[in-house]
Image (tube, rainbow, N blue to C red; front, top):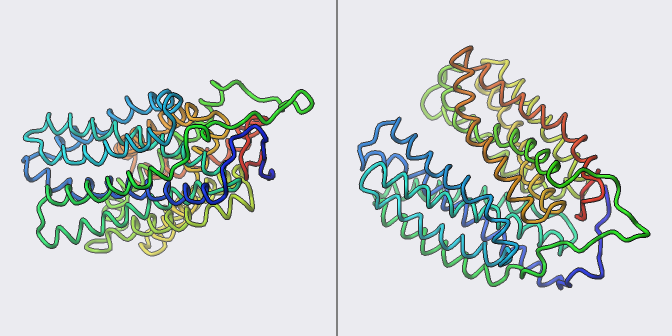
Length: 407
Protein backbone atom coordinates (compact mmCIF):
# COMPACT_ATOMS: atom_id res chain seq x y z
CA UNK A 1 0.00 0.00 0.00
CA UNK A 2 1.42 3.34 -1.00
CA UNK A 3 1.38 6.41 1.17
CA UNK A 4 -0.66 9.49 0.21
CA UNK A 5 1.19 11.64 -2.28
CA UNK A 6 1.59 15.39 -2.04
CA UNK A 7 2.44 17.54 -5.02
CA UNK A 8 3.58 21.16 -4.67
CA UNK A 9 2.11 22.05 -8.06
CA UNK A 10 -1.32 20.67 -7.21
CA UNK A 11 -3.93 23.36 -6.35
CA UNK A 12 -4.14 23.71 -2.59
CA UNK A 13 -7.44 22.75 -0.98
CA UNK A 14 -7.81 23.47 2.70
CA UNK A 15 -8.80 20.55 4.95
CA UNK A 16 -12.05 22.30 5.87
CA UNK A 17 -12.89 22.90 2.19
CA UNK A 18 -12.12 19.29 1.29
CA UNK A 19 -14.23 17.98 4.17
CA UNK A 20 -17.13 20.21 3.16
CA UNK A 21 -16.85 18.89 -0.40
CA UNK A 22 -16.91 15.35 0.93
CA UNK A 23 -20.29 15.82 2.59
CA UNK A 24 -21.61 17.72 -0.41
CA UNK A 25 -20.58 14.87 -2.73
CA UNK A 26 -22.27 12.37 -0.41
CA UNK A 27 -25.46 14.42 -0.66
CA UNK A 28 -25.30 14.32 -4.46
CA UNK A 29 -24.86 10.53 -4.47
CA UNK A 30 -27.78 10.22 -2.01
CA UNK A 31 -30.02 12.32 -4.27
CA UNK A 32 -29.13 10.17 -7.28
CA UNK A 33 -30.05 7.02 -5.35
CA UNK A 34 -33.36 8.55 -4.25
CA UNK A 35 -34.37 9.36 -7.83
CA UNK A 36 -33.51 5.91 -9.17
CA UNK A 37 -35.46 4.23 -6.34
CA UNK A 38 -38.43 6.53 -6.92
CA UNK A 39 -38.68 5.46 -10.54
CA UNK A 40 -38.22 1.77 -9.72
CA UNK A 41 -40.96 1.83 -7.06
CA UNK A 42 -43.39 3.47 -9.48
CA UNK A 43 -42.79 1.19 -12.50
CA UNK A 44 -45.89 -0.95 -11.68
CA UNK A 45 -48.00 2.22 -11.44
CA UNK A 46 -46.85 3.41 -14.84
CA UNK A 47 -47.45 -0.05 -16.29
CA UNK A 48 -51.02 -0.05 -15.02
CA UNK A 49 -51.71 3.54 -16.12
CA UNK A 50 -50.54 2.86 -19.69
CA UNK A 51 -51.86 -0.75 -19.83
CA UNK A 52 -48.45 -2.09 -20.80
CA UNK A 53 -47.56 -5.75 -21.16
CA UNK A 54 -44.42 -7.07 -19.41
CA UNK A 55 -42.69 -7.12 -22.80
CA UNK A 56 -43.62 -3.47 -23.36
CA UNK A 57 -42.22 -2.55 -19.95
CA UNK A 58 -38.94 -4.20 -20.99
CA UNK A 59 -38.86 -2.10 -24.16
CA UNK A 60 -39.52 1.07 -22.18
CA UNK A 61 -36.79 0.29 -19.66
CA UNK A 62 -34.35 -0.22 -22.52
CA UNK A 63 -34.77 3.49 -23.26
CA UNK A 64 -33.09 4.44 -19.99
CA UNK A 65 -30.15 2.17 -20.77
CA UNK A 66 -29.78 3.52 -24.30
CA UNK A 67 -29.80 7.10 -22.99
CA UNK A 68 -27.09 6.31 -20.46
CA UNK A 69 -24.85 4.57 -22.99
CA UNK A 70 -25.14 7.48 -25.43
CA UNK A 71 -24.42 10.16 -22.82
CA UNK A 72 -21.73 8.56 -20.67
CA UNK A 73 -18.87 8.75 -23.21
CA UNK A 74 -19.50 12.50 -23.65
CA UNK A 75 -19.10 13.29 -19.96
CA UNK A 76 -15.31 13.27 -19.94
CA UNK A 77 -15.24 15.97 -22.61
CA UNK A 78 -17.80 18.07 -20.73
CA UNK A 79 -15.92 17.68 -17.45
CA UNK A 80 -12.63 18.67 -19.08
CA UNK A 81 -14.21 21.86 -20.41
CA UNK A 82 -16.49 22.91 -17.54
CA UNK A 83 -15.22 20.95 -14.52
CA UNK A 84 -16.88 18.11 -12.65
CA UNK A 85 -18.64 20.44 -10.21
CA UNK A 86 -20.63 22.26 -12.87
CA UNK A 87 -21.36 19.11 -14.86
CA UNK A 88 -22.50 17.28 -11.72
CA UNK A 89 -24.89 20.08 -10.75
CA UNK A 90 -26.23 20.58 -14.29
CA UNK A 91 -26.78 16.85 -14.81
CA UNK A 92 -28.25 16.49 -11.31
CA UNK A 93 -30.80 19.25 -11.85
CA UNK A 94 -31.66 17.79 -15.27
CA UNK A 95 -32.13 14.37 -13.73
CA UNK A 96 -34.47 15.72 -11.05
CA UNK A 97 -36.55 17.50 -13.69
CA UNK A 98 -36.59 14.61 -16.15
CA UNK A 99 -37.88 12.30 -13.41
CA UNK A 100 -41.26 13.96 -14.06
CA UNK A 101 -41.32 13.03 -17.76
CA UNK A 102 -42.10 9.28 -17.54
CA UNK A 103 -45.13 10.03 -15.37
CA UNK A 104 -46.53 12.36 -18.06
CA UNK A 105 -46.08 9.89 -20.93
CA UNK A 106 -49.36 8.98 -22.69
CA UNK A 107 -48.06 5.86 -24.46
CA UNK A 108 -45.17 3.43 -24.75
CA UNK A 109 -43.04 5.34 -27.24
CA UNK A 110 -43.27 8.64 -25.43
CA UNK A 111 -42.35 6.72 -22.27
CA UNK A 112 -39.35 5.23 -24.10
CA UNK A 113 -38.21 8.72 -25.14
CA UNK A 114 -38.77 10.10 -21.64
CA UNK A 115 -36.68 7.32 -20.13
CA UNK A 116 -33.94 7.94 -22.70
CA UNK A 117 -33.69 11.52 -21.46
CA UNK A 118 -33.76 10.41 -17.83
CA UNK A 119 -31.12 7.78 -18.56
CA UNK A 120 -28.89 10.30 -20.34
CA UNK A 121 -29.08 12.69 -17.38
CA UNK A 122 -28.31 9.84 -15.00
CA UNK A 123 -25.38 8.66 -17.12
CA UNK A 124 -23.75 12.10 -17.15
CA UNK A 125 -24.42 12.62 -13.44
CA UNK A 126 -23.03 9.17 -12.59
CA UNK A 127 -19.70 9.79 -14.33
CA UNK A 128 -19.37 13.43 -13.20
CA UNK A 129 -20.13 12.79 -9.53
CA UNK A 130 -17.67 9.89 -9.46
CA UNK A 131 -15.00 12.11 -11.03
CA UNK A 132 -15.77 14.77 -8.40
CA UNK A 133 -15.46 12.03 -5.77
CA UNK A 134 -11.97 11.22 -7.05
CA UNK A 135 -11.03 14.92 -6.77
CA UNK A 136 -12.32 15.01 -3.18
CA UNK A 137 -10.40 11.84 -2.34
CA UNK A 138 -7.24 13.38 -3.78
CA UNK A 139 -7.76 16.59 -1.80
CA UNK A 140 -8.27 14.69 1.45
CA UNK A 141 -5.33 12.37 0.66
CA UNK A 142 -7.26 9.38 2.02
CA UNK A 143 -9.86 6.96 0.66
CA UNK A 144 -13.46 8.22 0.74
CA UNK A 145 -14.94 7.05 -2.58
CA UNK A 146 -16.62 3.96 -1.12
CA UNK A 147 -18.52 6.14 1.34
CA UNK A 148 -20.05 8.03 -1.59
CA UNK A 149 -21.40 4.80 -3.01
CA UNK A 150 -22.71 3.93 0.45
CA UNK A 151 -24.60 7.24 0.34
CA UNK A 152 -26.07 6.17 -3.01
CA UNK A 153 -27.18 2.87 -1.49
CA UNK A 154 -28.75 4.73 1.44
CA UNK A 155 -30.56 6.94 -1.05
CA UNK A 156 -31.86 3.80 -2.76
CA UNK A 157 -33.10 2.39 0.54
CA UNK A 158 -34.65 5.72 1.59
CA UNK A 159 -36.31 6.18 -1.81
CA UNK A 160 -37.74 2.66 -1.74
CA UNK A 161 -39.01 3.09 1.83
CA UNK A 162 -40.60 6.49 1.10
CA UNK A 163 -42.09 5.19 -2.12
CA UNK A 164 -43.64 2.22 -0.35
CA UNK A 165 -45.03 4.55 2.34
CA UNK A 166 -46.57 6.91 -0.22
CA UNK A 167 -47.98 4.01 -2.20
CA UNK A 168 -49.61 2.76 0.99
CA UNK A 169 -51.06 6.24 1.50
CA UNK A 170 -52.48 6.10 -2.06
CA UNK A 171 -50.53 9.18 -3.19
CA UNK A 172 -50.51 9.47 -6.95
CA UNK A 173 -47.36 9.00 -9.01
CA UNK A 174 -47.22 12.65 -10.19
CA UNK A 175 -47.28 14.19 -6.67
CA UNK A 176 -44.73 11.61 -5.54
CA UNK A 177 -42.37 12.46 -8.40
CA UNK A 178 -42.85 16.20 -7.83
CA UNK A 179 -41.91 15.85 -4.14
CA UNK A 180 -38.68 14.08 -5.05
CA UNK A 181 -37.87 16.49 -7.89
CA UNK A 182 -38.20 19.57 -5.70
CA UNK A 183 -36.50 18.19 -2.59
CA UNK A 184 -33.63 16.40 -4.30
CA UNK A 185 -33.18 19.20 -6.84
CA UNK A 186 -32.76 21.67 -3.98
CA UNK A 187 -30.32 19.30 -2.28
CA UNK A 188 -28.18 19.04 -5.43
CA UNK A 189 -28.09 22.81 -5.92
CA UNK A 190 -27.15 23.49 -2.29
CA UNK A 191 -24.54 20.71 -2.29
CA UNK A 192 -23.16 21.92 -5.62
CA UNK A 193 -21.95 25.14 -4.04
CA UNK A 194 -19.65 23.06 -1.81
CA UNK A 195 -18.16 20.80 -4.48
CA UNK A 196 -14.54 21.31 -5.51
CA UNK A 197 -13.81 23.65 -8.44
CA UNK A 198 -12.43 22.64 -11.81
CA UNK A 199 -8.82 23.29 -10.71
CA UNK A 200 -9.03 20.32 -8.33
CA UNK A 201 -10.17 17.85 -10.99
CA UNK A 202 -6.84 16.92 -12.54
CA UNK A 203 -3.93 15.39 -10.59
CA UNK A 204 -0.61 17.15 -10.78
CA UNK A 205 2.28 15.30 -12.33
CA UNK A 206 3.88 13.04 -9.77
CA UNK A 207 7.03 12.28 -11.66
CA UNK A 208 10.24 14.09 -12.52
CA UNK A 209 13.40 13.31 -14.47
CA UNK A 210 14.90 12.05 -11.20
CA UNK A 211 11.78 9.99 -10.46
CA UNK A 212 10.57 8.48 -13.72
CA UNK A 213 7.35 6.45 -13.78
CA UNK A 214 7.40 2.70 -13.60
CA UNK A 215 6.62 0.90 -16.80
CA UNK A 216 2.92 0.97 -17.55
CA UNK A 217 0.58 0.28 -20.43
CA UNK A 218 -0.82 2.95 -22.73
CA UNK A 219 -3.98 4.76 -21.59
CA UNK A 220 -6.15 3.05 -24.22
CA UNK A 221 -5.02 -0.39 -23.07
CA UNK A 222 -5.65 0.53 -19.45
CA UNK A 223 -9.14 1.77 -20.29
CA UNK A 224 -10.01 -1.60 -21.79
CA UNK A 225 -8.43 -3.55 -18.94
CA UNK A 226 -10.23 -1.58 -16.24
CA UNK A 227 -13.35 -1.59 -18.40
CA UNK A 228 -13.24 -5.39 -18.56
CA UNK A 229 -13.05 -5.64 -14.76
CA UNK A 230 -15.93 -3.16 -14.45
CA UNK A 231 -17.91 -5.08 -17.09
CA UNK A 232 -17.57 -8.34 -15.16
CA UNK A 233 -18.28 -6.66 -11.81
CA UNK A 234 -21.36 -4.82 -13.04
CA UNK A 235 -22.58 -7.93 -14.84
CA UNK A 236 -22.86 -9.60 -11.45
CA UNK A 237 -24.13 -6.57 -9.57
CA UNK A 238 -26.79 -5.83 -12.17
CA UNK A 239 -28.01 -9.40 -12.60
CA UNK A 240 -28.44 -10.58 -9.03
CA UNK A 241 -31.34 -8.28 -8.20
CA UNK A 242 -33.24 -9.16 -11.37
CA UNK A 243 -32.98 -12.91 -10.85
CA UNK A 244 -32.89 -13.39 -7.07
CA UNK A 245 -36.68 -13.42 -6.70
CA UNK A 246 -37.19 -16.01 -9.43
CA UNK A 247 -34.35 -18.10 -8.04
CA UNK A 248 -35.90 -18.02 -4.57
CA UNK A 249 -39.29 -19.06 -5.92
CA UNK A 250 -38.36 -21.61 -8.59
CA UNK A 251 -35.23 -23.21 -7.11
CA UNK A 252 -35.48 -22.68 -3.35
CA UNK A 253 -39.26 -23.06 -3.28
CA UNK A 254 -39.99 -20.08 -1.02
CA UNK A 255 -43.07 -17.87 -1.27
CA UNK A 256 -44.68 -14.80 0.22
CA UNK A 257 -42.56 -12.31 2.13
CA UNK A 258 -39.61 -14.73 2.11
CA UNK A 259 -39.23 -14.17 -1.64
CA UNK A 260 -37.37 -10.95 -0.96
CA UNK A 261 -35.06 -12.31 1.74
CA UNK A 262 -32.13 -13.09 -0.58
CA UNK A 263 -32.22 -9.71 -2.30
CA UNK A 264 -32.65 -7.88 1.01
CA UNK A 265 -29.60 -9.68 2.41
CA UNK A 266 -27.62 -8.73 -0.68
CA UNK A 267 -28.67 -5.05 -0.55
CA UNK A 268 -28.04 -4.57 3.17
CA UNK A 269 -24.66 -6.32 2.98
CA UNK A 270 -23.60 -4.19 0.02
CA UNK A 271 -24.57 -1.00 1.85
CA UNK A 272 -22.63 -2.11 4.93
CA UNK A 273 -19.63 -3.11 2.82
CA UNK A 274 -19.51 0.29 1.18
CA UNK A 275 -19.77 2.03 4.55
CA UNK A 276 -16.73 0.03 5.70
CA UNK A 277 -14.92 0.14 2.38
CA UNK A 278 -12.74 3.19 2.87
CA UNK A 279 -11.29 1.73 6.06
CA UNK A 280 -10.47 -1.47 4.21
CA UNK A 281 -8.88 0.55 1.40
CA UNK A 282 -6.69 2.45 3.87
CA UNK A 283 -5.57 -0.75 5.51
CA UNK A 284 -5.16 -3.13 2.58
CA UNK A 285 -4.95 -0.98 -0.57
CA UNK A 286 -7.28 -0.73 -3.54
CA UNK A 287 -5.90 -3.70 -5.41
CA UNK A 288 -6.48 -6.10 -2.53
CA UNK A 289 -9.94 -4.71 -1.80
CA UNK A 290 -10.98 -5.42 -5.40
CA UNK A 291 -9.18 -8.76 -5.57
CA UNK A 292 -10.31 -10.18 -2.22
CA UNK A 293 -13.77 -8.64 -2.48
CA UNK A 294 -14.38 -10.16 -5.91
CA UNK A 295 -13.09 -13.60 -4.87
CA UNK A 296 -15.17 -13.47 -1.68
CA UNK A 297 -18.33 -12.58 -3.57
CA UNK A 298 -17.78 -15.28 -6.18
CA UNK A 299 -17.08 -18.00 -3.62
CA UNK A 300 -19.91 -16.85 -1.34
CA UNK A 301 -22.52 -16.92 -4.07
CA UNK A 302 -21.14 -20.18 -5.45
CA UNK A 303 -21.52 -21.89 -2.08
CA UNK A 304 -24.99 -20.40 -1.67
CA UNK A 305 -26.03 -21.93 -4.99
CA UNK A 306 -25.04 -25.41 -3.81
CA UNK A 307 -27.80 -25.55 -1.20
CA UNK A 308 -31.59 -25.67 -1.30
CA UNK A 309 -31.86 -24.30 2.23
CA UNK A 310 -33.30 -20.75 1.86
CA UNK A 311 -31.51 -19.48 4.98
CA UNK A 312 -28.10 -20.77 3.89
CA UNK A 313 -28.72 -19.49 0.37
CA UNK A 314 -29.56 -16.04 1.77
CA UNK A 315 -26.25 -16.12 3.64
CA UNK A 316 -24.52 -16.78 0.32
CA UNK A 317 -26.25 -13.75 -1.17
CA UNK A 318 -25.20 -11.73 1.87
CA UNK A 319 -21.54 -12.70 1.43
CA UNK A 320 -21.83 -11.85 -2.25
CA UNK A 321 -23.13 -8.37 -1.41
CA UNK A 322 -20.40 -7.77 1.14
CA UNK A 323 -17.68 -8.83 -1.29
CA UNK A 324 -18.91 -7.00 -4.37
CA UNK A 325 -19.74 -3.80 -2.49
CA UNK A 326 -16.48 -2.01 -3.26
CA UNK A 327 -15.44 -3.64 -6.52
CA UNK A 328 -17.00 -1.14 -8.94
CA UNK A 329 -16.52 1.97 -6.74
CA UNK A 330 -12.81 1.24 -6.33
CA UNK A 331 -12.37 0.53 -10.05
CA UNK A 332 -14.05 3.87 -10.83
CA UNK A 333 -11.63 5.53 -8.43
CA UNK A 334 -8.66 3.79 -9.99
CA UNK A 335 -9.76 4.95 -13.45
CA UNK A 336 -10.08 8.51 -12.17
CA UNK A 337 -6.70 8.58 -10.42
CA UNK A 338 -4.87 6.91 -13.29
CA UNK A 339 -6.69 8.32 -16.31
CA UNK A 340 -8.63 11.40 -15.01
CA UNK A 341 -12.25 12.25 -15.86
CA UNK A 342 -12.24 10.89 -19.38
CA UNK A 343 -10.90 7.62 -18.01
CA UNK A 344 -13.89 7.28 -15.69
CA UNK A 345 -16.27 8.06 -18.56
CA UNK A 346 -14.81 5.38 -20.81
CA UNK A 347 -14.42 2.73 -18.12
CA UNK A 348 -17.93 3.42 -16.79
CA UNK A 349 -19.41 3.06 -20.27
CA UNK A 350 -17.77 -0.32 -20.80
CA UNK A 351 -18.81 -1.39 -17.32
CA UNK A 352 -22.40 -0.28 -17.85
CA UNK A 353 -22.57 -2.57 -20.87
CA UNK A 354 -22.07 -5.45 -18.40
CA UNK A 355 -24.93 -4.10 -16.30
CA UNK A 356 -27.17 -4.27 -19.38
CA UNK A 357 -26.06 -7.58 -20.86
CA UNK A 358 -25.90 -9.48 -17.57
CA UNK A 359 -29.64 -10.10 -16.97
CA UNK A 360 -30.42 -11.36 -20.49
CA UNK A 361 -27.25 -13.49 -20.47
CA UNK A 362 -28.40 -15.18 -17.26
CA UNK A 363 -31.78 -15.77 -18.87
CA UNK A 364 -30.20 -17.29 -21.98
CA UNK A 365 -27.95 -19.64 -19.98
CA UNK A 366 -30.86 -20.58 -17.72
CA UNK A 367 -33.03 -21.39 -20.73
CA UNK A 368 -30.35 -23.71 -22.16
CA UNK A 369 -29.40 -25.34 -18.85
CA UNK A 370 -30.99 -24.37 -15.52
CA UNK A 371 -31.51 -21.26 -13.43
CA UNK A 372 -28.92 -22.48 -10.93
CA UNK A 373 -26.26 -22.66 -13.65
CA UNK A 374 -27.42 -19.32 -14.97
CA UNK A 375 -26.81 -17.78 -11.55
CA UNK A 376 -23.43 -19.51 -11.46
CA UNK A 377 -22.38 -17.20 -14.33
CA UNK A 378 -22.58 -14.33 -11.82
CA UNK A 379 -20.27 -16.13 -9.40
CA UNK A 380 -17.88 -16.93 -12.26
CA UNK A 381 -17.76 -13.30 -13.41
CA UNK A 382 -16.61 -12.15 -9.95
CA UNK A 383 -14.06 -14.95 -9.66
CA UNK A 384 -12.61 -13.74 -12.96
CA UNK A 385 -12.38 -10.19 -11.59
CA UNK A 386 -10.45 -11.50 -8.60
CA UNK A 387 -8.06 -13.49 -10.75
CA UNK A 388 -7.42 -10.71 -13.27
CA UNK A 389 -7.08 -7.81 -10.82
CA UNK A 390 -3.40 -8.32 -9.78
CA UNK A 391 -2.21 -8.26 -13.39
CA UNK A 392 -4.26 -5.18 -14.28
CA UNK A 393 -2.95 -3.22 -11.29
CA UNK A 394 0.62 -4.19 -12.13
CA UNK A 395 0.11 -2.64 -15.56
CA UNK A 396 -1.12 0.54 -13.87
CA UNK A 397 2.25 1.07 -12.21
CA UNK A 398 3.46 4.66 -12.45
CA UNK A 399 0.03 6.16 -13.18
CA UNK A 400 -1.69 6.01 -9.81
CA UNK A 401 -1.39 9.10 -7.61
CA UNK A 402 -4.05 8.34 -5.02
CA UNK A 403 -3.95 7.11 -1.44
CA UNK A 404 -4.56 3.43 -0.84
CA UNK A 405 -3.54 2.35 -4.32
CA UNK A 406 -1.31 -0.66 -4.03
CA UNK A 407 0.25 -2.07 -7.17
